[in-house]
Image (cartoon, rainbow, N blue to C red; front, side, top):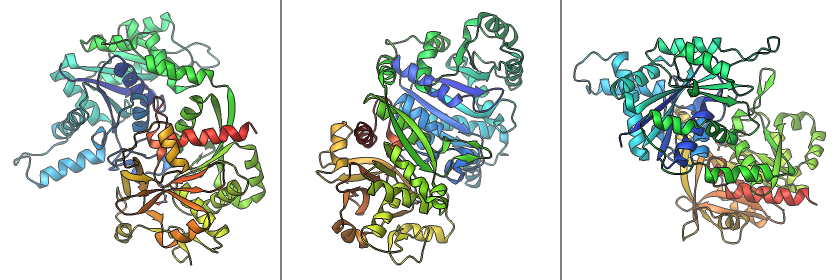
Length: 551
Ligand code: GLN
């Protein structure tokens, strides 16, 4: 079959859930027997998401091959259950960078290099390269931003060009928002009509409109959209608000969205859909025992609002792992700064069944995090440290158990008498040369598990891929590491090194002895947990939290 392309674009406003819609289309089509991949086209000039502030842009997701990309890539991986690559993510900056490099190398053979067609052509080249690399039959491409913006025009132009060449192989989905103003009490379609017209002005006619709204759309609205937006009435698909995003593929299928897309692309389903997915959702519905999990961070506040987007993969991992064990997690956001100004607040941690200290950078709130780690260690509260959270636990242990007063990470205190966390040698010169972009230790690296540790038993128990010599592969994003000069001292006081990178002897996992669960990882296990394949360390953490809650 020829390769097929589904472009997903947003209308009316941002945050209507284009990413999850794109991912859900992927879930459905994969379950119907197709090899699927998903791409994100981000209108930013940034080369990658690594240099963006998480409170502004949300989490920086890391692919296996080390790309720092938009959080939607995490949604795609979780929903589709496929590893994506650098080629699946592009930004305006990346496109221009390549085109300019090619121009400098005389690869345009003396032609004038112009925004059109050279920029859209580079976009199309990347889409096709991603399809080739992932061996996909169908690619779903999410165009970032909202229709009507100046920023995403080049991506829409690429989509238009692809459709013009192969109209049978390309389809368009507009994800729009239909408000129900409280004083009017009726769902309004005008904004969607305007968004469709905007899209039409780019030479694109949507085949489907996903109607994001508080409620499902009714026949009257369907007819209106058909008349004013020139779509088939049955191609206006309801996308009502949901409590659990994993319900979305099933909701779409209530209106046979998958088969309608396949028909549009001249394909037929190959098998019955969403069998495994529905099984997973069954576990979510059956999960009744409540667990209180605290997430300690600092990337929550945005103006007067609280946004948890910066930790989305952690949050989704905390949703996925418990439900498969019958638990329903309640997450509590804990601002690390508050433990610095108000140490009494630490006592509130007793009410929690488990605490996660996720990844982070810089000094703000760091002493608060260290205080949390100490409290969890001393009061036997399950603690799971992810990257920075692991470094924090090590610092706390060095200070309070090994009595290394003033122990710290060089990231915060370059003059510390005990740099138990220090900069990786190759990172030193990168920082000196202000080489900040995409220069951390990124992507998948090996970790050899130490037999008999909590981590070792979790990876085996929950059937994650472990090689015969007990090696796992996990994703990274850091510049600092545990300083091996202190390893013997830390170990003699009861810190267990449960995993090491075999190539450079770098500490990957630590555990604290005689504690129900105090585990820290230098890698980010949250990037690899998926509904149909929960991550083993999250499973083990939740099990320990469950045991605490039933005490
Ligand atoms: N700031 C720490 C480092 O660079 C931790 C990074 C992280 O948590 N992703 O090593």
